[in-house]
Length: 283
Image (cartoon, rainbow, N blue to C red; front, side, top):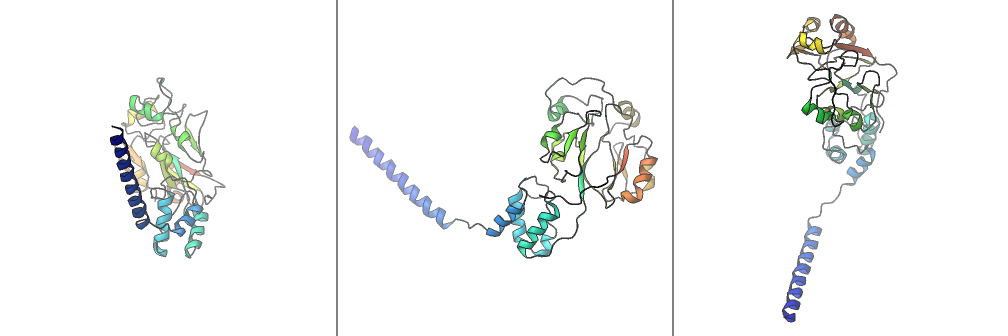
């Protein structure tokens, strides 16, 4: 009996040893050589792996840069690292430095503050927007408004979002925001949007996502968009769909911003000018 046990042990050991040797030589034969250029580019990147560049992560972005022609490279951009990082990579690749890029930051398309949209009920559940969105409308009754529970604050990798104690709404710090898009993907109500800022620091957008009809929307929030289409008379590229107006990101804030904010009867259109904003993000 003992001889049989020993025989089985030797056989199993032999099989394991043979398999190990085969795997060793196979791994050596098919081992892919790492690209030192990719590693150098990765060292320049912020390693946030946010996906704002359109790639899976920083490694995927670095690989794309290393394989790119100069023309292809000019179309790649890391919003988090900004031009500082992109020009470091351009130097590594022997390409010309990129020209100035338009600054972009996240905006909150909701103005349902405690004053504009008083609470009609109290949410008593887990402190999470994702969970609250599945079981309840906003405290003010708006089915598309901010839930005030701060998932965006906790998700932002750059601490660029804080909850305003007075309004209970998220506030974005334009100097810290890198347009990485994490807040856009986190908010269950899709209230965040990445929008450009012109050279004068101007932006114009509709701070509302309420798709209810005008009278109901105004009942829940006094600054809700009511789909009146007055903004569309200013510029035909502004469309109203599902009782909600949307201003394209390509629309000139300098040319139309002030006029649009003044014509909006509920002040749902926000025109603002941010001063002393940093033009480029540093890694």
